Image (tube, rainbow, N blue to C red; front, side, top):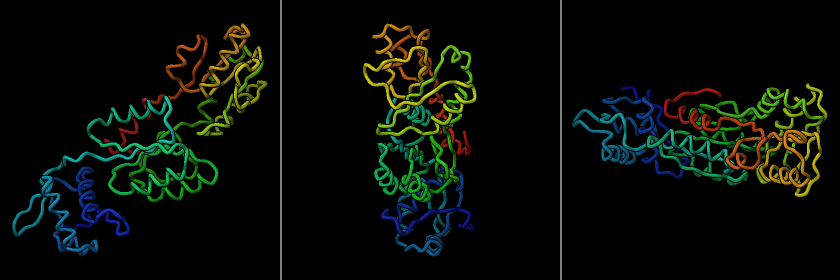
Length: 333
């Protein structure tokens, strides 16, 4: 057999034992179908020579695979694959920038669809690039897929693009936000923040015509910054349709409300303060003031009637990511 057909990965700079890397790489190839049931593997000498490994390392890896029932040996002939579906499940590293209501929906959809077919290791880097960098560097070995939610700006954006190249492109799935400069990946399921808000508002154009002014409440002083593309999409809609508009950073408690305006709100805290102010001033929602809330949550269902919501299908986002993993599908959505 020509062992070059099998793209085994052994990183001589890694702290992970080489025999364990060899085991993981062979198991991964079996799960992906690169190595077939009944296929003969390279001899210990051949594998040792081709990958600059000691005989002891290869022997230890083959022995571990035999104990797991993945390989069997035939005296005088060599080692063969005896199980095309190893007991070890696929391993997936999932890294989110934060935990919010809608990101929990994405994670639950991903985890529920994968079920017992994959083992998920889940990390949150809380918008801290150093924490993200440490997480990636400590988990570069032993995973079949990396599902990453990259929300970075400025210098962190450039550092991210450099770091992400350490992950093999065929294992990388980008979720929620496709940063400019990410060119090679297995799959990407992301929001187009600029066009999503523009298109959603365009669909509701007739409703917005009831108001003399549109106000976007775009939070600046938050731990997890939102993409500036949301502001671009909002402004483009207003300019194209000749609306008077402005962008503010927050709705403070007891803030006076502009009667005859429609507010586009992102943060739930701003939404709560806005509704409180409307009630205090005894204004009528949808008649005196309009509200369009960004991303749906259970809280918004009980806050007030008349709150319109624009949201992404986050369940579908998680399901598409799991489909890419389970069925080895690639693409952009």
